[in-house]
Length: 291
Image (cartoon, rainbow, N blue to C red; front, side, top):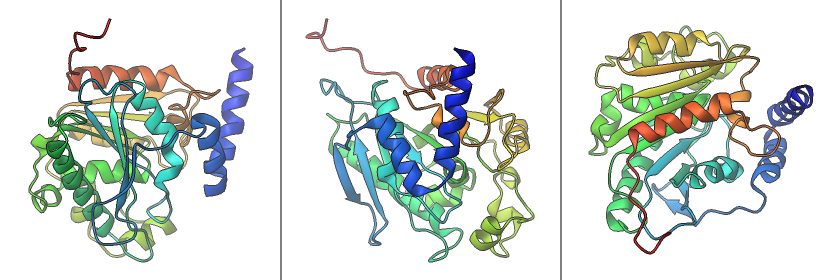
C-alpha cells in the first residue's frame, strides 16, 4: 500500500508540474465540479484583480476566513484551478478567498504584493458587510511557492497593509508551503524578470524587521529542488513565533498536492495545518438547532 501511495503521488506531482492544463486536470480530479459561492468579485480595476469566495456548506454561523495565494513564479496562475484547496478548507469549516493578481511581465515587483493587500482590504470589508457569512476577526493567510512569498511579504513589509488601512493585527496567522523567502541575489530567470534590480532590503522577507509578524507555520519538503528548504529554515530562525515542518520524501509540489483528497492526501502536511488553524482561530459554537 505504501508503494502504491508513493507511486501515485509521484505520478500526480509530475502531472501537476507539467503545466496549467495539467493543473486543471489535477484540480478536477480532486474537486470535481466544486464551484465558488461567489465568483469574480472585483477588488480592483484591472481584469485580474478579482477573487473567488467559497463558503462552507454549514451556513448557520459565520465562518473564519482563509485567503489563499497560489504560486506560479509570479508569471502564471488561475484562481479557478485551486478549487481543490478551497474544498479542503471549506470542509474544515472555513471560508476561502482565492484572488487572482496581475502577472509578470505585464507588471513586476511590488505590484503583485500590492494586489494582495488590495484583495485583503476588499475581503475584510466584505466580512463587515456580511457578518452572517464570514467572521469579522483576523484573517489567516496561506499560499504555496510564490504565493507563500506573497502572503509573507505583504505582512513582513508593513507598508503594504498600511496602504490599505490594515495592520499585522488583522492577520491571525500565515501558512507558507514551500515558499521562497531568502532568494537574493536573483539567480534564476523567474526572479530576475519579476524583481529586476530591486534591492534585497525591499524584496526579501528575511531582510525585514519581523518582530511584528503573526504566528507562522512553514512547511517544506526535504527534496524540494525548486525552492530549497533553507528558505523556510532561515525565515523560521528570524521570525519570533514560527513552527517549521520539513516533510520527508517530498518535493516542491508535494506540499500543495497534499491538500488534495484523492491519492495525494498527506497527513504530514494536513495535521500541522489543522493544528495551527485550531490554535489561531476560535470557530463559532454550533447553533442550538444543530445536533
